[in-house]
Image 1 (cartoon, rainbow, N blue to C red):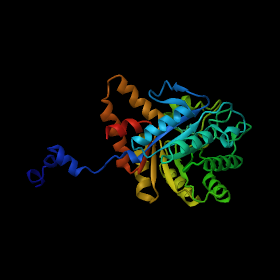
Image 2 (image 1 turned 45 degrees about the vertical axis):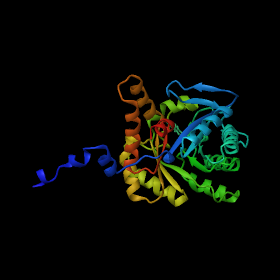
Image 3 (image 1 turned 120 degrees about the horizontal axis):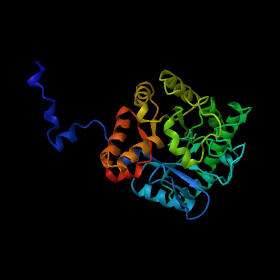
Image 4 (image 1 turned 60 degrees about the vertical axis):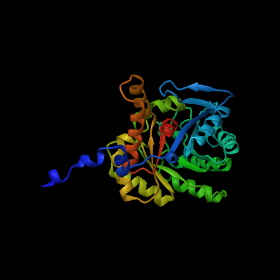
Length: 322
Ligand code: PBG
């Protein structure tokens, strides 16, 4: 007879008991804060759909990074909004591109902060797609060259980790080869391995000005209905040389995070994306959700599902709460 011998409530009765039996812990070191670099000086342009997030000129971005560092946050991931866009995504792999400049500035001013870069083309192409477009189709193999050049330019600028998010086939291998040949054999690759074609990227596209001008990303990002396919994507990225893997978005894909954790021993990240943030923020601002508890519970659920680290726009808020 389990009851009354067993009473699950016994160890929930007091705070010290609850602390003792807690299975999942959050630590600011496991948070990565996404930041958006834009041209100019003294620019802090609010992103309306993401309250508390800004397009930042490099001087402002550096301030944000030193704040993140003093809060004990694990690192930042940088995205760029270039002055001009073109068909060839030139700004993505220019040595003086906006992200490359931002990396140099952050590594100079806050050298101990881990700096990751998002390797993709959609912020830099005039059409907003993640690769070379020919006859309305995103081309896979020619895009690999851009990605490899971008990753090398980021490493040259001092990036600690490069994170390809484009979902072209073969990009991890192409980037690994280019990094090795360019003298960066020690720069790790964090692959956005299982990245879904998600509605939850909406606010990010406002932030990064990267909405596709025609069509959508479903010919390269994954179908939200597929779970087994995510395991194949991850497996292939690891075979190609990914050092760390990521599932994105996070909360609607906790089952994928769990499967990935159980199946692969590589460090696993999860991206709590812009739409997840905005959705929670909207409810918080309406007083429909308790801010602090909603933030921590959302991150705890992602960690409990198996993520080692989390990319989250709540990084600073959560660090302050811990
Ligand atoms: C670039 C990229 C995107 C995100 C991260 N890298 C947008 C997209 O794929 O459309 C989304 C991040 C977010 O929503 O917070 N390809």
